[in-house]
Amino acid sequence: MSRVNEMLTWMENRPFPFACTTNFGEHLDPATLRRFVFKVRLDYLAPVQVEAAFRAYFALPPPAGLTDLAALTPGDFAVVHRKAWFLGKHGEPEALADMLRAECDAKPDRPRPIGFRP
Image (cartoon, rainbow, N blue to C red):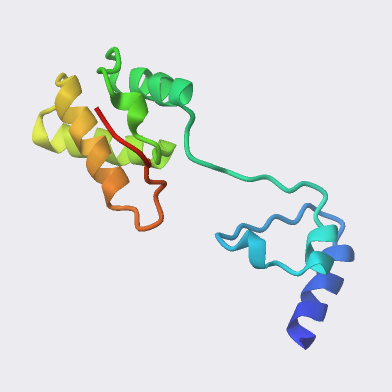
């Protein structure tokens, strides 16, 4: 407990900005959360953001079905951009979408759709 108290004291007494990140925000103590002025949640991209990212990274219109991928981040687009360069697939929207799908499938905690799929 003394390390937590030390960190809280340190946070309150610094004159400069202090930033923290975690994948376990729901486990933070309420006393810790009260000391943060801004609490920002970074989540997966929304469908309109997925389309914009595809255009920005690949300068191509997004293929059909791309917005069905529910666990994409800007980092996924960066990885696929580099991978496509090595594989010579930059001009192939379907191949790019398949690589993005593989990035989603590699995530252990990705959201999974429920119900029937066409």
